[in-house]
Structure formats: structure tokens, C-alpha cells
Picture 1 (cartoon, rainbow, N blue to C red):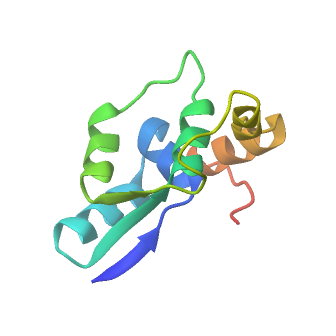
Picture 2 (tube, one colour):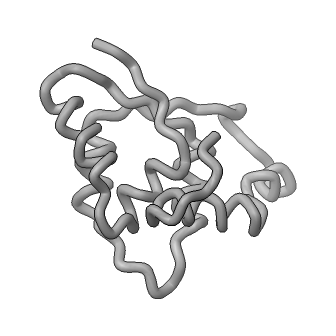
Length: 109
């Protein structure tokens, strides 16, 4: 089975993508035992941070994605309150992830 690290924009597409063909294909591959997802804590946090108030959220699709995922800690177990500010993405990062997730282009990478 191939392990596949999911980027923030893919997680965000699962959450808010209007036609998440890429995510649905990935979930199908995982269901068939072809891939196992790995998700970094910071990518998950970035995706949630990028959701707007008026977005339509597909919780079931996210749950299906997480069902086949292993969450990977990418920081020490405990972060003090000051260190957590480093987890806040910039407006430019959020805008790019949203463009990718919503199929509007964006810079993958």
C-alpha cells in the first residue's frame, strides 16, 4: 500500500470543495486499499483555519478522508501559548489554498 501525504489544499477541498473530484478519487483509492493517507497536524490546522464563515462544509467527506488517514505530529507534544502563534497561516497562504480547493487555480506546492 502506498502512503500519500495530503497537503492543506486537498484537506480544504474535502471540507469546502464544490466538486471535489480529486478528493473523491483519493477516497476511492483508499477504500480499495491502494493508498493510505498521512496528514500533518499543521496541514489539518491550516485547512480548518482557511474555512470562511459562509462556506458550505462537507463534514461527511472530511470524515471519509480521515477514516483512511494517519495523523502525523509535526511539532513537539506540548507547545506553549506563544509558540502556537506560528500555526496561524498568512492571508496569502489561505488565499492560495482556497483557490486550489475551489478549483480556481492557485499554486500547488
